[in-house]
Image (cartoon, rainbow, N blue to C red):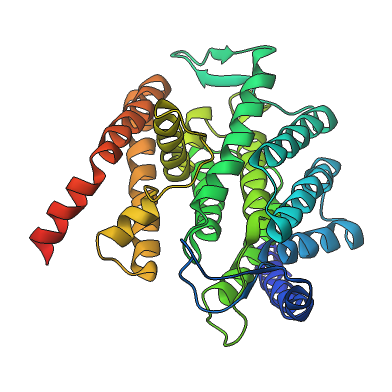
Length: 353
């Protein structure tokens, strides 16, 4: 069997196993109250099981335990991620304070840095190929990056399929970037299985099969953010300049990072918690413009691809430093936009409708 056929088989197997796990966990979830109930900002119909994340984690863990596909680093990723799964399940059941979740995220990140030895050491490559190393400051940067991305995926999980599709796009765009830059994918089997599990989850989440609808839950969205963060770190660091350029990691997850960072800064300027909910996330904006949840999903994913193309074009044409500067300019422009978003959306609706 060729490598490509094996990878396709693993994608299909992980997807089917995830769907099967979802089906098996649904009665238990309803019995113990692990469901999302409609009301307030939640507009879905009926009580939806919050078992998507635990199903993905269960499938990945089964491969880690019963096969030899994962090296020790990726086994550590899953082992440490169990902290996030546990705290996420507790939150899904009883709504704990954000500070407790933040503490679990910090603990998980520190444990993984210590166990794998991986962290952000190089933030860019200067003209001539000289690495801009950050030494011990890299531990703090890694902590901020991983915790930030965990919360970015958690906050993006507002409409069906969005967080999972952002994770799938992150995986695919990392593959594409490494092909362009001639690098090797770190943790390829882990990533392939994660991709398959996400596809299986989407089949249920988007109701492609009847009576299978589930949500990721906080456990699932935190798991995705954690895994995507470590996929990007493992593919941008410790490669001697032969892996993914560090700035490309920013562009691969540009939409969730920009949306979360801009809104968190805005909330803090208003003397509110950066974790406080509001209706100014990108998916809320799309809904405000009159798009359906499905149209919003397509719009945001398309926007993610466009932003990635802008980022990689800037890198190839002008180099890494310009690419990084442009990324933060984009965040600034997005911050300005959300301050006036309701005026902009009202004007847009009048023009279109």
